[in-house]
Amino acid sequence: MNDAAFIRLSGVSKTYGRGQAAFQALKGIDLSVAAGDFVAIMGPSGSGKSTTMNILGCLDTPTSGSYRFQGVQVEQLSRKQRTVLRRHYLGFVFQGFNLLARTTALENIELPLIYRHEAAPKRHATARAALELVGLKGWEHHNPTELSGGQQQRVAIARAIVTRPAVLLADEPTGNLDTRTSREIMDLITGFNREQGITVLMVTHEADIAAYAKRIIRFTDGRVDSDRRNGEEA
Amino acid sequence: MLWNTLLLALRAIRRNLMRSFLTILGIVIGIAAVVTLVTLGNGATRSVSDQIAAMGTNQLMVVPGQRFGPGSELGAPSFKIADVDAMRAQITATRGVAPVVSKSVTAVYQTHAWSTLVTGTNNDFFLAGGWEMAAGRNFSDTEERAGKAVCVIGGTVRDKLFGRQSPVGSEIRLKGFACEVIGLLRGKGQAAMGQDQDDTVVMPLRTVQRRLTGSQDIGRIMVSVTNGASMDAVKLQLTSLLRERRKIGESEEDDFRVMDTRQLAETLTGTTRILTMLLGAVAAVSLLVGGIGIMNIMLVSVTERTREIGIRLAIGAFEREVLLQFLIEAVVLSGLGGLIGIALATGASMGLAGLMDVPYLFDPGINLLSFLFSAAIGVIFGFFPARRAASLNPIDALRYE
Image 1 (tube, rainbow over the protein chains, first blue to last red):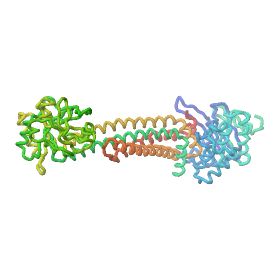
Image 2: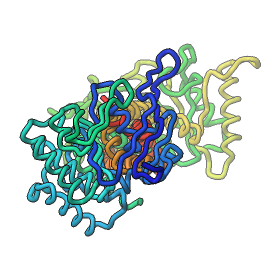
Image 3: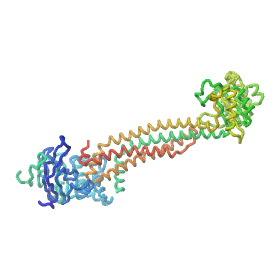
Image 4: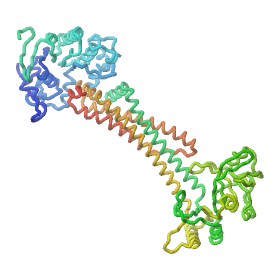
């Protein structure tokens, strides 16, 4: 891999707190991800996988080391510049869905488009198209409480891909779902990766969910423990 | 960007109707209470000063003691009829000097009874008070001198005792003696403090002293000064005359007061102004309680709002955009609450002013003040928790419990 890699973490460390109470969540991570890849990040809790995810998602900054996203030195960006980066290149799916309460499916999906200042007619059309893509046509005007968990996660995925992001970051996207629904959600995410070439970075602790990915990275104690292509022997 | 943010703010208000309603309600009640009470208080103050102004500027009132009204100093002797006569004799620039003695008495005519205020005085009283006769006549010299049982009654007393019937020539009974009604006063309506001026019976001073109060004391003296004469000069003359008559030494202070209309107005409007301030203060408490209600609602929803902020930030909203949205929300809600409160207060004060017979005075100051106060509460409690949340790392905001 060279420096022009799509995503590259070099010697990334992250320490929370100071002095005695300091906790080193990441202890020098080196990681490259190619465009179009589908990476599952696994590991026990406290292993640093969520911290890595937050750094990759430009939600958090490393204490030391560097993060290049499409050649851009992310740790040198301001908070606002990182927001612009998120707004244009990243889509997020969370374990807890994190839809806005009492807000219809369509309005939830429209939200990132509003922050991209797209005009109303185009915004509505794009949001509708995304809703159809996740198979929720006809559910436009339902609030999150009127949707099942699987449906809520579909809305969340639609919200994440409605801006056609380069990277989809999914933090335990099936953590709150049953097996069958999990499979549907994973099929959906796999589809976006395969058909639209969206790079997917996914945190999970379930092996059968990780099996959907092309590449599986295991974290232990703030370090990369193993990194293999799916199908290779561990 | 502003349009987008406005859209987001309005959506947020719409999807939290209950919260929005409660926020508005607190402000509405607070503002309505403050504005209504202060407006009515102002109206009452104006009504007092108007009525005093209507008395004319050439009236003086002499009262024993240094203070006016309840709490007049004990030990300051009342006036006697000799004081009145001396004023009349020695002070030239007067049109009339009217002694006033009042007592509450029940008046009876046939089967009707009515408790009213009887005033013992002389004919100058009608001049000083601006009273006109609607029917009949005032007192004759003989009646005044002999203390005859005659009276002039006000419109309210007529209504209560005689109904539509003409009272002149009839006899009413007051505390065991009969009294011939010789005149009926033209109606004046409500007085400054809300009492009915027409609820009165006027009799010669001597009659009241002899039959009702049983003493020679005179409560106060009203002096009408000749038009064009100097009020200050008459005041000085009255003061030195009374000091001499009451044997007050050089170094001692007056044990009476000579007040002109302006002083009277100041005393009375001072009272209503204090009342207005008290009422306003009580209402301000309700505004404060409303404010605490808003604060409560805003703080209760802070968990949900913090997560919402986390979502927005993660999705790609600038901190500034989120803050602007929350600010607009707070301003729209508080502003709306303020406007509704002011509208409600305007309606209520107009209606109540009509009922209480005081003028309706729009006071821009109190409207603006209470509006700004409620807006400030809304903004402070809607905006500042949001500001804290927006400065969080989006991930922390998302996980906020």
